[in-house]
Image (cartoon, rainbow, N blue to C red):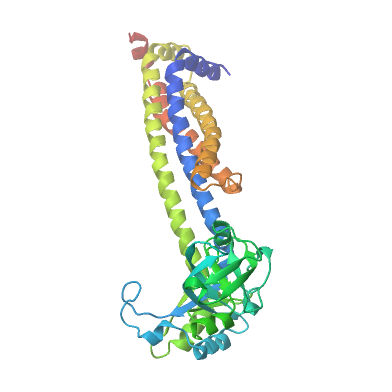
Length: 395
């Protein structure tokens, strides 16, 4: 098609100018697509880390409506969940599983001559370990009072293996425990954070600390039940007169987290879109310059019978060539940028080659092409509507 060839010729004649215009589009596409890739990777990382706790309802003692730890409103009795209250929760949520959890922090020493360290200690009845979906990288479940299980990060930081011994308390005053299993990394969680903690039996915890009241209750909601409904049942059962417990629906919290990350992704992508708008202004200026430089040529074309729509096509083709080439190059570079950003910020690129990434790149490329075409419409319209006689007189 002759007008397509004329458009390509004009780009070749003004190669540097056209290349700079393409560069603006490339930068815009890379900014939009790479920010989208990063946002999607963040959401996927969080989702992967928290997917195993999306079926949980967490019950903790109500500490008052004040601010933060030790806020006013709750008495010391409110700082624990009694066994009677646990039994109420257990009956109310059936057939879902209610898991009582004891927790504290303790000074301890690994092996002989090891450094004193402080770590979280959870007391849980061994029968509930499968319900918490705790998996072991080595070793296994501890059923005796002389053993414990440790988190992966805790084991790695302190060079702990199955069979290692941990002296609990200052100078081992609370006895020695043998490691029976190392728990796989769980990442973020709403129920119990095991990665940097040790797990002992409820019986050992009670005997050592003389505590039978619980710090929290984790309800694992069975398939067919709704976490929001379970939350309402618990609140109705225990908070009839006074607010005794606080209840958190992990699924609703997850939805809020995903929504927040989605808003952040949209925001940073919009910031990237600013560079695309700047590139669009550059395309508009270049196309207007092209029209002004070729007024006499347009006049000659119109005088020999070239139609308005054909003149418009010539300039739109020119904008399309710049837009398509710049956007495709930008799309390719955005994958490289997304890979680098993910490796640097998330230390992982496992979420790079996904459908969400393809959509982000496609949106960036599509937006770049649309911007170029949109910014070429007015110059093309102006060229097509030049008065042929005035155009021929133009110097």
